[in-house]
Image (cartoon, rainbow over all chains, first blue to last red; front, side, top):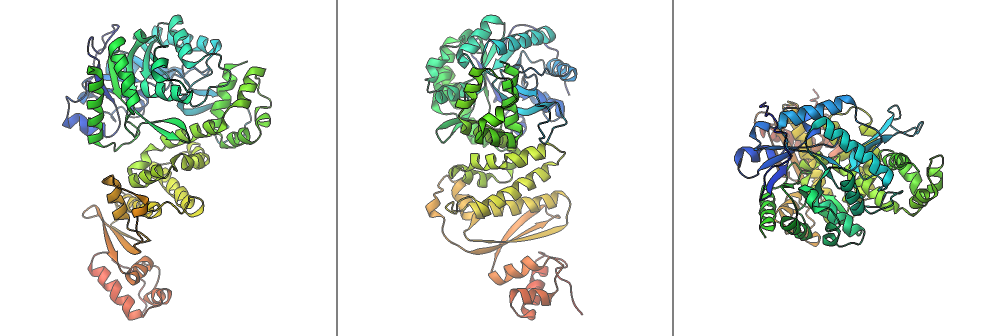
Length: 291
Length: 257
């Protein structure tokens, strides 16, 4: 595999027009071979590369953005040294301009003697990002985690907002206020998952565009775009369907008034996502960015 | 109040279905022993547990994303009938048990298919036209493709359908699927995998042929098949011979001399 040397500078996939990339899934491999100019970059999960370094044809990717779901930034179970080291290794090997992680936790201390299936393991490993309670105590945890990452990796750290289906117990502020406070207290930049923003706003009865304006837009470097499904009146994240128009509305606002540099199509839950649909989504995104 | 304790409780809901059920039925009992301040305890009391269950279902679904490549039209129908989240909420327990131990991708797929087959038989409403037939069709194709991948030379499956899975799938693909348009069309389909050409072919057969081939797995005699199907032995033999000539089966039955 080709190894690119990283350029350790603030920034950026580009200045000016945001570039458009795709989140890696099995269907992306033939796409990279057939249509190498279609996307400006490929966002790859660190965990995929760690599990099998050859699973993604990095040499065919125009540029790689590394996306992690292993550092449990808002949790109190830190990753082990092997994980830290592997993330650092893949930052070097991919020359990613930044590392994105979730503003969430993946692991938590196990309740001793709970008698459940994995009871010999001292932690619960959800295997999925969930928002921690949004309060000063968890902000302290996240700020410390961002500092640790920044010192260790020397590239910008982007945090991705989680979709909220319920407000985590113990929260003392909204997610929008929480993100604003985080940016006041740390140099973290944002990966705004526009779909998550819309889900959170709508599940809380808020207008997504109004909610967007409560965020520090100048901190947003990258956005994710995916679909939403409705079940019994609740909006749920769904990377197998097209984004609703409100996601494009948010994107249009961001294209006009933020430091946005990268837009990632995140249709990665279906290994057979139809190519015509993907091309249609790409066209929609480009149109929204040009508006 | 410890944020870590809240994380522990939410994480436990996601990986321990028994605990999620307890939190749903008796919140005080579930939270007993956890160090929570009054406000946080009260937040838990006010929590919309359906959304917590929904999150567990979504996580279960996402962690089984690889399944859909085998049953894409079954998925389209579960979405169409608003069943997807309910199915994965019900699969949560088994999924977590699977996560607890080593398993291959094929085992995981088979366990989900067994679960879904059981759910279709037991609790998924009958008013879901096409769903059972499309699932049976896609499952049989998966079984035979798995056989091919494992190098099995020739494999045969037979299914009875009350509607045409091919018609339903065509309607889904052409985005013209309407449940009321699924018409009753009882039919027997034979699925044959041939390792030499690495394909699975599907043939429609009459009821007698379907019943005979369904029993011709090499463990029954012609006489036994004739008895079970209630037809003449010579007719069974003719059907078996025709299937052998077609290359569908090689040594189909125990021959009694």
